Length: 315
Figure 1 (cartoon, rainbow, N blue to C red):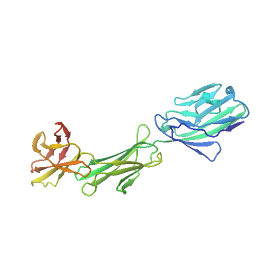
Figure 2 (cartoon, rainbow, N blue to C red):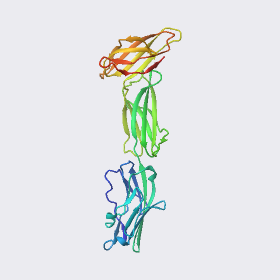
Figure 3 (tube, rainbow, N blue to C red):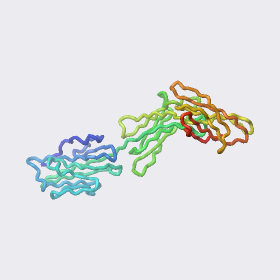
Figure 4 (cartoon, one colour):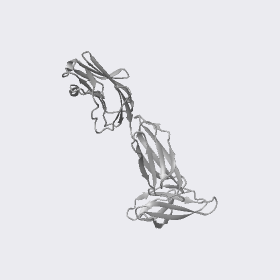
């Protein structure tokens, strides 16, 4: 007589959740997807009484009625990524091994075990989950007085995801953005938040991402890196002052060079400001005449004559 055996240990490198369904021989298995991961679809049986004669044992695994692996007449045949362990069959283990796992492997599988006149069927539903990779950045918007927090999530499956942007325990934005499907079957999505440098602390934002593949949300810090901003209240036809400001500079800066096209129009000794966290900000002023349309201000270091930062400053 064939009997379903209790589910045994699954591969420790997999995050696998096995749920008993309402029908006795129906199982649901959830696995995290990765090129290195193997999904094990359990099919265990016990033959009473006596040992198993493998030549009288038939095992067939099918997916949507199409065979993917089988053991018939003492021989194993299987697909490219599917396999049965012949050395485990004698102990009643007819589990299907699938490696690597892809998103397209989701679905219902059927394990059919036949021994002489005895038979047993087990249905297994495979659900694939891929956790997101989360990145958080801050950049300068077109207006020098504005910054943009960008929270992005890539490589996740299934599609649904939630992204929240926070600061000082305050949720500034929370949404379930539209996801884009990538060539490997996973999804990517992003959320942005625009803020004013002058009214909000620019040092730290939190990007929090929730997804069904995660036990807990992923949190990433977004900090402003060294960046060159152009601040101006220029009025057409009137002399104005343009301010070139470099935030969070970590090396000493001796000169800020202003250019119009390829022509140097000003070499300035910048004002240096030290922030409470030990970072420096440097600032240079340039008198803008009505005919001057564009300038750019690369920052040079006393330690290295190469340009450390070079960004086009549109006025």
